[in-house]
Image 1 (spheres, rainbow, N blue to C red):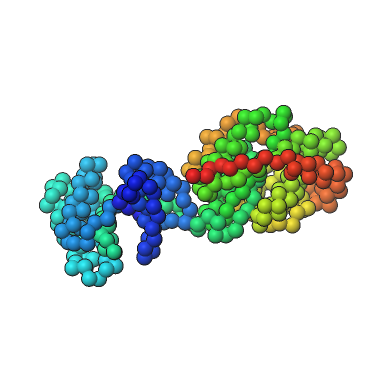
Image 2 (image 1 turned 90 degrees about the horizontal axis):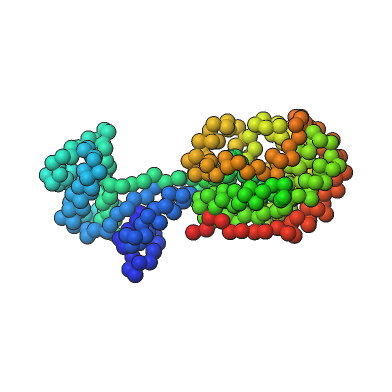
Length: 360
């Protein structure tokens, strides 16, 4: 709940009986509400004031909330009440009936509708009295960080930010890695990934984005590998590099935006190839999702418009015209070893750039 204005314009957090109270000045409310709208692990919030625990003060607050509803064009309302302090003179039924009567007397344009109300006024009698009518639904899920940390392979596309969001909603703290191949991929493509990390980080209490140059590795693949295998081998190198980074920063798993059979590298056989040389678990929250559902979620979290900007990432630029569709892991491993990528991967990790994105 957003409480009464804090002294000195500071934002203060309190906890009491299953509630969090954020005390802030009126000018800070938009900022606080924006943060709450992106905070995992809360069912909802409302802006309220702390009222004296008297019948008169509660009824006066009910009238104020009724007037606010009517000023917004609402014509019907319902009251819900909860009395934690049993010493208060009115029980829950009394709060509902007396509060409704006070509103009907003071705001003639409002009517009661308990089945389909245009507005809902809530009364809570705790250590103080709280009356509010602007309750907002939260994201729910689990608080970020309660389920360990994972490393997200963040491309510039639609899928990976959604995958990161879904894992964050299950309580996982998110780090991210982005591979770029400058000058074959543009600086705009790199900045696009940074912007996606900023958007996702706003839901994850911030993200550390690790940007790794993969140009030498991609050129090695292009020079030595059979053309149909280039995408799979590139993904194998990315997975190995990401695992080394995850172990270095003590993340427990990798996260990707892969969806089964969405593109050639995401057939079950090719997914088996790309993860065949790593030991950390790979979480794929989108594996059974269709593209339309992924797009809707990307729009909801505000990532879609950035994801569709026409700046191609390194995977797209080096895609073969006729890729292998059902690769054999043993053949993939043999081809990968011929690349001798270890030294190049270690060099790429040494030159890794780390940015803080989306921190409040």
